[in-house]
Each structure stands twice: as C-alpha cells, then as structure tokens.
Length: 154
Length: 165
Image (cartoon, rainbow over all chains, first blue to last red; front, side, top):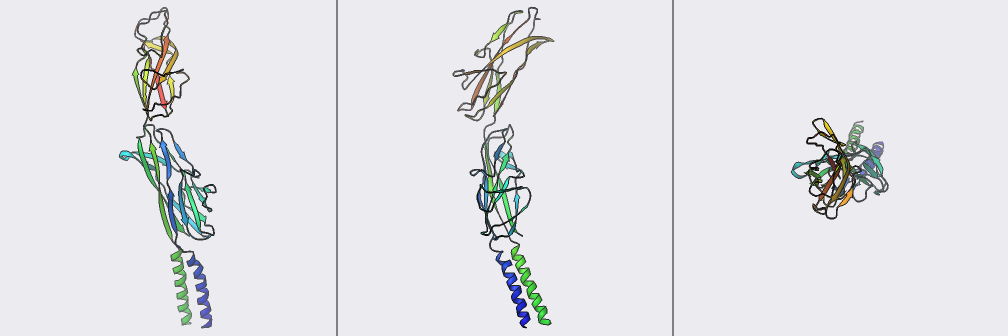
C-alpha cells in the first residue's frame, strides 16, 4: 500500500506540470493590415515591420511551451459591388516576437503552419504584412478581408 | 495486485486528462483594408489637324494651338502624380504613300483653356499631377514635311498616349 501511494503521488506530480501548461490560451487581434490609399495598377506593399500598417496579434499562452501558429489567409479583399482586390502573402510576411516588439521579430511563412516556443512570461506577438495587387481598372472604393490566426498548444 | 491494476487505471486517466487539457486551441482575426482610388480614364478629345498641306512646304501645328493641336483628356484620382508616355509615328500614310512627321511638342495643363500649361517633349514623356478635381489636359503638336513631289491625298497616323499612376 505504501508503494501504491508513492506511485500515485508520482503520477500526480507528473500530471500537475502538464495541467499547469493548460492555462487559458488567449489570442487577440490588435491591429489590421492597412493598405490605405491604393492606386489602380500600382501594387501596395505593407511590411510586417511597419509599425502603423502591419497587422498584429497578441497571444498569451504556455510559458516556454511549443505552440503551433496557423493562418487562414484571404486570396482577395472584397469591395464595392463584390469587386475583388487580390492580396498576396510572401514567405516572410509574418513575424514572431517573443518580446512583443515589432523591432525584434523572426520572420516566417504565414502560408505554412509554424511551430514556435513561447518565452517564460508566455506573452508573444505575431505581426503580418501583405501585398495588395490592384488591377489597372480596379473599381474605386473600400475593400476588406479577414485574416485569422489559430494558435494550438502542442 | 488488484489494487495495482486500479492504480494503473487511475494513473492512465490522469495522464489522459492532462493530455486532453493540453490540446487547447484559440484564434482571433484582424481585417485587411484598402481604399482603391479612382482609375485613370483617357480620352482622345481632339485630333492633331494639319489641314491643307502643300508639297515642299513644311507645316507646323503648335501644341499651344487650341484649335488644331491634338488633345487628350485625362481623369483620375485628384492631386495624384501620373506618368505620360507616347507612341509617336515617324510618318503619316496615305494609300501606300508616306509623309514625315517630326518635331513633336506637348503642353499639359489642369484646365482645358491651357491656362498655366507646362511645355514638355512628348518623346521624353512627362510626370504631371492631376488637378484637385482629378483632371489633366494634354496637347500635342508636330510638324509635317511633305516632299516637293508628295502625292496628293489624306494622310493619317496614330498618336498613342499612355497614362499610369
């Protein structure tokens, strides 16, 4: 019985750290990707390092834990009368910052699920850039699209 | 031994519970936005017209000639710079005969009256801005050089202007 108690205690101790990593995971959309005024036929690039126009997500999660980041990216923005404005994401258009600083990012491909390690305080930011490619006869007006970031504990 | 088995089940349940809690996921969204400005529209508003031309006598139509100069009307996003470029014919044609056209001149202005117009070389192009109302007017002039034995007829050629932001 004594041995059984030891085993049970050991299992519980092992279980506690695992459960502790299961603290609430929160993802918050802080800022959208803003292309501003776009001229027909003239591509507009927003860099992930652009402090005013890049997109930003803040994440609170596991301290020191591996986490999978995956995006749902739009192919186009929708405008007046259903007009479409193509939007493109390049291989380094997303950035992960373990200090939540736009000036300290590690670039990654938002088109591919990416595993990152959280810092010990569990707070990180993800920045996003993109390129809008209006046609020469692009209809004037406001265009929007939604970018979704899903974060999963591994 | 039986209690060991129960213990194993309990331990397995704990581990499984821990694993299930760990497989947590969350998401959020942001919006991408763009404001597309007015597309450029170009209209060939007036032909470059030399009128009657006599063999051996050069004839010039200046870009400042509001009646005979060629004119393009451009509309687009207000107060926005554009680039003008031209495809200019070297000759005019008439039923297999040709007549040289040279010395192109240009003027661009915010008003159709040409007030405040700026001279430029069509061969080199120009980078004016659309007016506060999104308008731009461009005139083209040139000189034709008929030979002394130039065949009579109506001679034509196409001048193409391309405008981009």
